[in-house]
Each structure stands twice: as C-alpha cells, then as structure tokens.
Length: 186
Image (tube, rainbow, N blue to C red; front, side, top):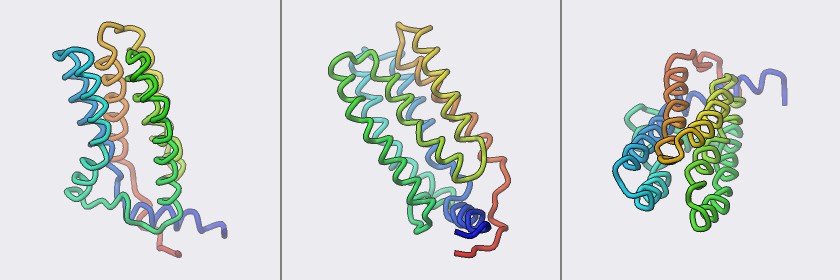
C-alpha cells in the first residue's frame, strides 16, 4: 500500500458514510428509551426493552441514514469491510450478554453497555480522529461508575453513561472536518 493510499481510503469511506451520525443517533434513541423505561417498568420487563431495543439500533440507524444522506453499509472500501468485521466481533459478545441475562441479569446492562461500544476504537482509527476512542473509554468509565453508584436502577444508570458518550460523539462528529476534499485514488 502506498503512503497516500490510506488518506484516499479514508476520504472514500467518508464520501459514503458522511459524518457517520446515523448509528450513534439510533443508539442514543434506543438507550434513552431503555433508560426511561427502566425507571417505570419492572426490572425484568425493562431488561427485555433493552434487549430488543439493542437489536433495533441498526435498522433505526439505516432509517436515520436515509434522512441524513449517509450510506453506512454499501461501500466496497476495505475500511468499510474492516468496520463490518468489527461489528461482527462486537456481536460475538452476545454469547456473554445472553449468558449474563439468563444467569444474573443484573450484569446484563453493564455488559451490553460496554460490549456494544468496543468497535468505536477501530472506527476512530478508520476516520483518523480520536472521537471513537474517547467514546469507548468514556462509555466504559461512565457505564461502570454509574452502574456501581446507582445499583437500584442498573439499566437507567448504564443508559445514562452510554447516552452521555453518544451525545459527545454526535456533537463531535457533526462538527469535525471531513476528508472528502482528498481526491479518491481507489
């Protein structure tokens, strides 16, 4: 790979994905709903709201992407394929999430809150910006701290941490300069 290939791949990635706001917006919506629902519903029902809500993030994100003119999945760019593999990697953690759900559901929101955010580190490298690394670290620290500090409302506690991380990321992604001006060489 030539020295200027990576900037060209990043520019191509951003031409398709745009500011990459759609999936964080969808995640923020789902985690907000789950956090609020957990304040009013019995814990078991709120846990299932989170379970099924987390499965709705991707389709909601695709709908938001259409509205924003983003295309987060239809790209033959190797960086898009890498991101897809990272999403697969994160989804392999469902073996752990479901085990916790059925063995000790009190850990499920923490596991999900941290696990579903790990791919942000690779996204950060792909776009050449620290937003994803900061998101993953902030999300992990806040979700864990709030889970310990608010043990009576574990879903709402983790959701608050996750939504704060999403809010930071949405704000940062919406304001960062894109590399789209770099001519594509792929």
